[in-house]
Each structure stands twice: as C-alpha cells, then as structure tokens.
Length: 287
Image (cartoon, rainbow, N blue to C red; front, side):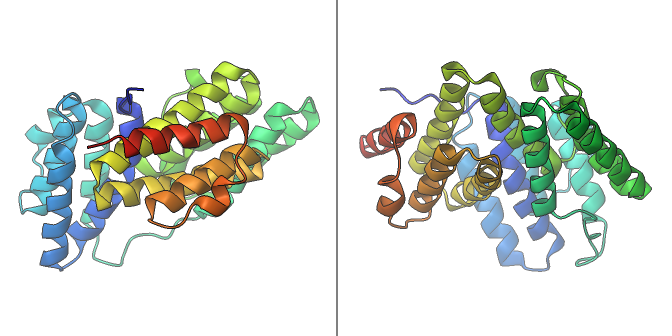
C-alpha cells in the first residue's frame, strides 16, 4: 500500500511545534542550540519539494537561526498563514528572554473547555449549550487586550460550534498554538458529530499518514513535534470518550519515542487495530 504524504494543512500542524522550538532557540544565547535547530530544519526541508509554500516557511526559520532575521520583503513573499506566523514570532522574539507573558488559560484547561464544547454539541440540551456559550463570552471579556486578540478566534469558533455552525466553515486562528488546538478539536468534533464510517476513516488515515511519514523521515525534530501534537489530540479524545482513538494515539506516541508499544497495541480492536497494522507494514517496508 502506498503511503500518502500529509496535506499542507497537516504539515502546518506539525510545523507549529517546530516553529515554537525555533523561537525558543532564537531567543536563547545558546549558539549550539541554534545551529542544531537550524540543521534539523534543513533536513526536514529536503522532504518538502512538493510543498513549496511550507518549504519557504522552513527556509525563513532556518536562515533566521543562522543569523539572518526575516525582512519585511521576505515575509511578504510567504503564503498568508506562514506570513502571520513569522510576524508573530518576530513580535515574541523582541521580548527579553524569559519575559514571555504567561498564558491566562492553560492548555490543559483549554483542552477541557474544548472537550466540554464537543460534548455539549453532541447533546440535544440547548440550555447546556447556551450556558457554555455564555461562559465563553465571560472568559473572553476577562482577557486583556493582547490575549483577547490571540484567543478570540478560538473562543469564537467554539461559540459558533455550539450555535450549530459547521466546523469546516470556520476560519483557522492565526496564532500557531491556538490554530493547532482548533485543528485537533475540529478533527474530533467532525468524527464524533458525523457519526459515519467516512469521518472516522478520514481521521484514522491522517493518523496513519502522519505517523508513517515521520517514522520514514527519521528526524528527531519532526518526531518530537508530532509526539507533542498527538498528546493534545489524545487528551481531547479521552475527555470525549473516544477511547479507541485515544488508545491508538497512545500506541503511536510510544512507538515514535522508541518505547515498547505492544501493551497498548494489544488493546486495539477493529479499525484502530487495522490502522496500527498499516503503520507497521508501511514503515517496515521502508528500505
């Protein structure tokens, strides 16, 4: 079976984590760390001949780590999502090391909030949906101007979902961190809400494709990025009682980290088991 490469959107999810690692290295005084991160990005760049828009983004980050901060002209040549990401990174990089503002809402709390929205959307209880939507408005109103700007797109998407809006019609948040959280939530929401085999099969395919691609790439940076990204999806799957998906993700994460995934793999059944077997078959067949 031929392995399908991740779509540009799926690549963007994984690259969000790499961008965070690049920013951390950029803001540090550790020259070796910058060089190592740049080298990792250069290796990953070699895998992107068919994705020029993402390749250009990775090139900008690598050059930045090598001492060439992106100019306005360089940024303008990027596609819009990556242009915004680099602009946000430049803004963050101007802060003194260690001075990054603390998030007003932790990622774990946001994950729980997203799970609550998914469960409420699945229910027929309009009173619960209205109450949760009002809670989201309250949260947004308590944020200062900076964090309201960053979190508003995610919070408004969650409110729209509670109002019955199709998740696929909603825009991606600009902030890389909250964009990834929304993409993870949307995957689970669609799989849970549509309730048909096509929706679940699509989610499983993406897990297989991303895991297979990263395993074949043999890149520590890309592996770490996917492991982190999958942790968010796994938490939300557990909180929404998608236990089969959560177990599969746990198995994939263990395998990516070089751990014995057998204990988790023995718990897989049906489509999740078939997805795991595809990962093993396709990676073992790699020369």
